[in-house]
Length: 130
Image 1 (cartoon, one colour):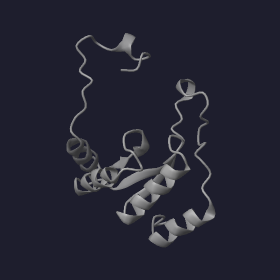
Image 2: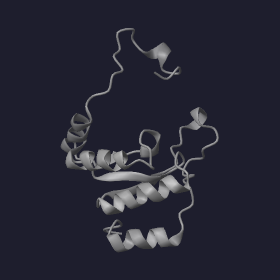
Image 3: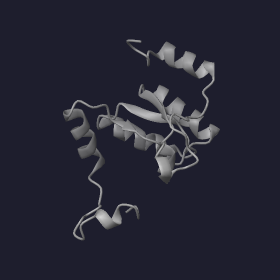
């Protein structure tokens, strides 16, 4: 658990994570859009197994993937972007800004995305209603 939270956390707090399918189901039940945030932290973008994991999450109701993240190098961005497009997932991006906890990341400071990526997303219909 994060050292900043420890002084505020009751001694009997259980920080184990619920099953993915339960989290996705709850997000959907509450009207949210389940998106896999910065997958490169947990999944190896070079491994075929990662695609299978994301496919399984999609079968559980996953609707998006954060392809562009300050946690991903250019290769990982390409892999997760293509994975999202291939699986017809909403593509998101983010800076993962956390203020003083991540002083080198600026709010809204997501990596630059070149126009061909945006054009591809437009063609795929990922900016519906804009």
